[in-house]
Structure formats: structure tokens, C-alpha cells
Amino acid sequence: MSRTAVEIATQPTCWRRAAEYAADFEGLPLPGERVAVTGCGTSWFMAMAYAALREASGQGETDAFASSEFPVGRAYDRVVAITRSGTTSEVLALLGEVRGTVPTLALTGDPTTPIMSAADTVAVLDWADEESVVQTRFATTALAFLRAGLERTGKLADGVKTVAEAAVDAELAVTEPLPEAVTSAEQWTFLGRGWTYGLAQEAGLKMREAAGAWTESYPAMEYRHGPISITGPNRVAWMFGTLPDGLAADVARVGGTVVAHASADPMADLIRAQRLAVVLAESKGYDPDHPRNLSRSVILG
Image (cartoon, rainbow, N blue to C red; front, side, top):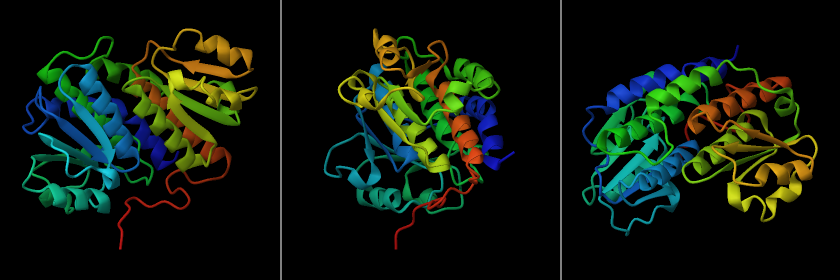
């Protein structure tokens, strides 16, 4: 079994620990604050998910940006940065630019890195750090930590489960067999709405990183505005959350396969996509722990 597969399976435990950590953590966004969340790659997609969830929960205006695209001159009450390695160049540069002008919180997996002094407050999720280059459990644990912060400070958006409930769903997601129609497909399109669009983006990235797969990601309602044209036999449309009305019929009409686990927490459903990425990588003879052309952290010279 690959190291990535082992790390994927630990996510229910990691999420529960993140929720405990968030229960009395000082430095999380407060209701009403105008917040920006940032990161690179996978961390940016987790930032997108959290930003949309926080706004939908009525806890304050929240934007998400790739760190290299952050609008430094825009006013915020708090900036939250996600960086597993604690060494990502764009994140560190951004925190340096905003230092002293806005409170900053960083989430990291490594407490021995420059991020510890770059941010005002640091949440160390070292139990969720990974040996694999590909991020799986750190990303979802960071999101679980931030979700738990929302639970602590207010009511979640309608239909959104607690982290404890999500962890229960995750226990099934780490063991349930993947359908043959999914593992044998030639193309996968991941779809989301609201906060699950960030998860759809991350699912597509994971498949590209680990398996070199042809994947795309879209807001679910935008899928029929062009992207459905690539769907057909042996191709999958995977929805995180509840399918919009009529979408399943449209995919069936063009011969595609719909995947949707509407009763599962979407973050738990992401685990299935992570597992699929490992299965596909191994079927091609790739090493999912060390994907081609990637390193654990992007450090610019």
C-alpha cells in the first residue's frame, strides 16, 4: 500500500482531532469580520471551500485568493493562510507584505518552518502532515479545523453537517469499494455548488497530480453551458453534494455516468476521489507518493 493511501485512511481521526483543537483556539475569524483566505494549489481550493461556507453560514464576508493573486491593497479584518509545508514562497511573501496592517492566522503542518514567525498566530496541524508529496489529509484537516471554528461561533449553513458527522461519513468513504464504472472511465468532470465547488476543484487536481488523468471541474450549474459537450460513454460527471434538478437526466442523455453521494458530507466524498486518484496512478505504474514534476513545496529562487 502506498504512503498516500495510508494517509488518506487516517482522515476521520484527523478531523476529530482538528475539531477538538478548534474548540478553544484563539485567532480564528470572528463573526462579522471581513476575512480573506489564501493558499496555493490544494490549499487555495480549501480556502475557496471555507470562504463560501463561512459566507453561506452568515458569519461574514469572506474572499479566497491564490496567494500570488492576493489584492494587497484591499481592506480585511483578518487574513488566513493555509500552507502545509510552511515554506511556500508566495504565502510567505504575502504575509510579509501585510504584516502589521491586518491580523494574520496561518495553518501549517510543520512547526519548524518560517511560517511560525511570518504570521501573528499559527495553528499547527502536525498530526495531519504528510510524507507524500500529494496533499490529502492535511488539506481536509485544515478545512475541518476551519469548519469547526464556524460551529463554535455560529450556526452553519442549512444542510451542512458538523465535523463530527462528517467524520462518520468519512469512515465509510475510506472503505467503501469504488464502482467499476468510475475506476475504468477515461475522463472525469467534478462539479460543486457553493462551498463544494472548491472540493470539486481539488478532486480534479488530485487526479491530475497523482494519475495524470484528464479531469475538469466546474460549478454544477455551469456544466451544461458548454462542458457537458465532452461527456459521453465511459466518462464520469461527479457531483459533490446534491445534484441540481435535471442534471442526471442530461448526463444520461449523452451517455455519461453520474456519481453523487448526496447523503454524504461532501468533504467525506472527496476521500473517494482521493482514493480513485491512487487507484488510477497505480494502474498506470505511477508512484502516487511522488508524482511527476512535483515537489512537496514550491520555493521560488
